[in-house]
Structure formats: structure tokens, C-alpha cells
Image (tube, rainbow, N blue to C red; front, top):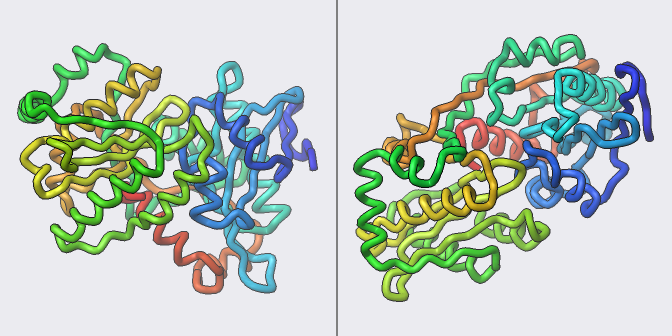
Length: 364
């Protein structure tokens, strides 16, 4: 259904009017497109029946969009609408405060008013305006949202890829660059691609690493494999596997959509620890993103207190530290706020809380 209720002149919105292929085509031109807004990620992570899609149009053309996951209490209209790393607003020639405010109004009207859900929005943290509660407040408050500051935050390192490769290499920390030089002298072989065979090679290294370090991981490797199988060409995860003498040394996985690459998973085999293959894979990722026109590389979370080794490794790439606290919320129905507080009344909500916690801490 298309509606104009409460929107500035020229804007309309419609919900749940497209399928997976149409949604993929809609995402493609948005600079802020990301893995978490793909239909396939939502279907694998939350289940396709929980997904909802909203399109904001101006003069008939799509200027903003959002994918949400819906969690409802049994035999009730109460529940949560969860929007992760959206809405998508950065479309050439269409982005602007007016579009952002119109999209905020459409989201609230559709999910908080009409569907009577508690609407939670976690904006894309890459962009400065989405990390400032003051700027978000100016955009969203007039549409009935409130900023909810959280104890957790998305804290990451963002590498600006606009300088030349030579300059990016000069910006590496000295020890990190020395380890990269060593890896390049070791005669390592790097294979990159999107095939499931490459993914399975990554998974074997990852499982061996977990066994060596004796830690239980919350990462569902089968879920990531299903996601890779489902994603369309052009949106699939990029997998890099590094070998020494035919034996696995290290592996990494990143996504590349919109104007940003995101590092998701990495692993090093026991023999590979001495090869510095992880340094080589990160540098090859930067090269690939740079050569394919991407503007940023998000290292997907840091935790200097709990994981100082991982933090120092990522810090060696010379990125800027960014942090985003909390989320936006809008609710018009007390029942939805009540069940959100109880949580256990919502099927799938426990998984939502785990995923949100991983996201805010820079995992998953």
C-alpha cells in the first residue's frame, strides 16, 4: 500500500511490496548499503517470515529504504520492529536532511503507529551524523523518536581508503609494516573468491584455531555458510585463504557493499602463526577494496580491554577509532513496551538480544 500520511509534499512510502530480487536491485545504488540490510542476511539470521521492507519514494522513485525484523508476542499485536544499520539514505542526488526526516516519519507511522510495535533503529555507524546523538535528535525527534543511550557501544577502527596505496602503506604502524614485509618474503600463496569450497577451507582453519585457543565461539559457521550460499553475485562475502607450501596458514572473510568493506571473520592455523599471513590478508583486502572503488574499510569492532591482542593488530592498520552509543526508539503502544521489557514473551527475542549485543560490541 502506498501512503502519504504525515510526510512532506512529494514523498510517499510503501511497505512489503517487493521480493528478494527487487530488494537486491534497490540496495545496489545506495552508498550506505551493507550486509545487514540484505534480504539474505535477514532471512538466514531472523527467518524470512519476520522480515519487513519499507520504501520511501519521491516523485515515484525510491530515495530511501529499510529492512526490519519483526518480533511479536503470541496471540498479540505487541512486539518489536528492529532496524539494523539503516535506514539507507545515501543515494546520489537524493540524500539530505529532508529525506532523512521523511523516512523517520514513514518508519514511525508504519511500525510504531499502524502496527503498534516498539520500533528500534540502530543507525549505520560509519557516518558521523549517525554517531552524534545531538544530530540524530534534530533529525528524528520531530518524528516521535527518542535517543536511548546504552551501556554498550559499537567501537571500531575505520580505514579511509581515499589515499594512494603507497600512502596507506606508509600509514601502517612500523611493526605491522615489518610483519607485512616479512609475510611477503615468505612466499605465501593467497587465493581469493566467493566459492563455498573456499569458505569450507576457512571454516577448517577457524575451527582449528578455536580448539587451539580453547574458547567457545558464538559464531555460527553453518549460518555463515548458508548466508554465502544464499547471497546473490555481487553481494557475496569475499574469502581469502593464505597457504605456505600448500598448507593453510590464515584466512579472512569480509563483505563489500555500498562504499564500505567490513571485516567479519579471521583465523590463523598453528603453523601459520609464524608466517604473518594475517597481515598479508588484511593488506590484500585493502588492495582489493581500493582497486574496486570502495571508500572505507571497517575493521568490525575493537575491545582493548577484553581483547588487547586483537585491538593492537587492528590498530596497526592506521584507521580512525569511531564509536556509536545506543539507538533510536519510538513506541505508541504500551503493550509493546511491556513485552519488550519482559523479552521472553517474544519468540526469537533472545537471539535478537544476543545479536544486538554482538553488534554493539563489534562482533557478528
